[in-house]
Image (cartoon, rainbow, N blue to C red; front, top):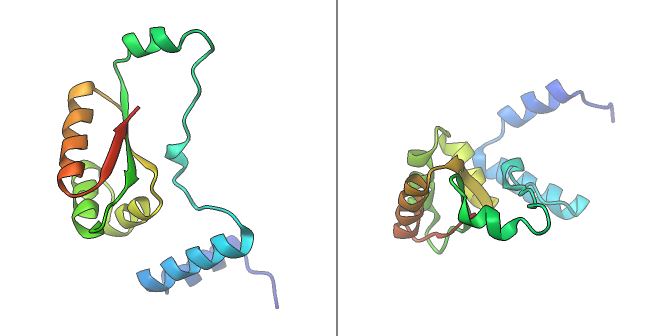
Length: 127
């Protein structure tokens, strides 16, 4: 089998349906023992001794989707409403939970997003 270039692979993926692509990702994760998580879900550790101080002065929050719950469709709709993601990207983000939905937002925006997502059946944490 000839080695495919990245561009050739991308073109091949464009021809797949969303279900076929989802099945491919699951198989890929199983075969290579990896997890295709959103890169935005990586958290940075606070310096030792500064955790209490950082918690008191925190002005920016990350909204992290821990679980979509039993019904994913309402959660996907809310993720699309909170972000500028398309349907496929929002579904992929929900499927890769836990994942950061919003990063560096105000306390008010984070609380509103958490309330909206939890209303759709998701489990959400603020960091």
